[in-house]
Image 1 (tube, rainbow, N blue to C red):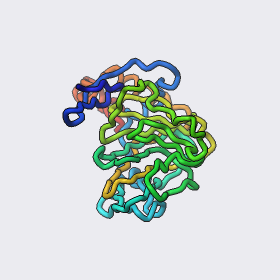
Image 2 (cartoon, rainbow, N blue to C red):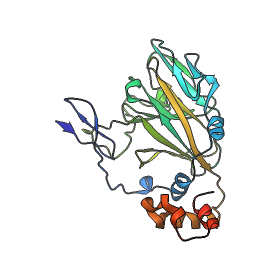
Image 3 (cartoon, helix red, strand yellow):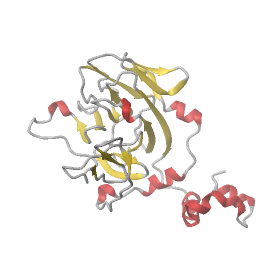
Length: 278
């Protein structure tokens, strides 16, 4: 008998493998309002390979139990060290603007404590034992992908107080199994951290991040796990140019089906190039 999964994620059949079953809810409230700037950013061409490398994992800012792969600078590998939790930070710390990156972390390689989030340069990168290290102190904020919990300064949280559930629309008896990839959205102008899965915006996870310099981070416990980061793009806090706003409206009007056939439209080539970010 399967369990219903909210938010277009996964259903779990106790008789076999997890299976995707898109189920979307109408999510209301300010925390579930998808920022217009996010839509504009996601409509832009993806960051170049050079930009992605500039925003990749930092081989000099990691636990000694993980290393960045020589043949894939966007991916780190964790050694099979028992009773150890290990982190790695991204190369770039963000203080302003909207920044989006994707994390690819195969579900079978997550183990008991797989946490994705952001941290300052002071956050710890290693701990003895298995723990949700990202979010354990006041310098990091993390989403535990297995427990569907949010952690920040967890060491100082009263024992009687449980960590918040995320996504917050989950009922107590609902499961939420993530696919292999998720999208992280850091808005340093609003001071928020959010996540997306399979194109669905899951709402604000953390607030109060303004005025800090924060880096992408994950904490892992699974031996030989490999986790990749791919910077999608960023937007400066300045007002968006009118040309960009007009292009966004035109592309929305075309729709997903026709957006790939712009070259067939009876328009001057200059306009076609403009609509295709060329």
